[in-house]
Length: 118
Image (cartoon, rainbow, N blue to C red; front, top):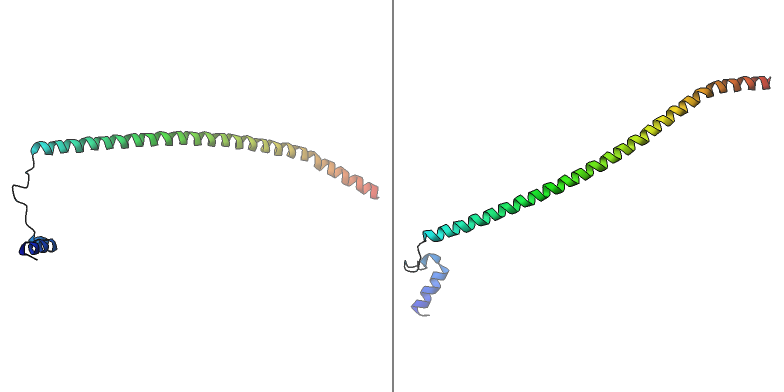
């Protein structure tokens, strides 16, 4: 290998030996370019923020509708259960009233049985 090949090889193996860019090659930052880049970043940031705002608004609406539907179904189920519960209670009260007359009838049957047995 010649000296130039060895120098390139050693700079690849050891980055500290790599040549630094010449000042002519490096371009100083232009203030106008920096402001343009900042404008692009700001515009993209605003677009992202608007997207997230839209996303959260959609989620809020969907959850609100879901909650309203669930609350409506829950209300219907509660009303149905209450109606059936009231019917059951009224049936029990009616049965209890009818059973009050049975006690007197049972007493009469006991007396009749004693008389038949005698």
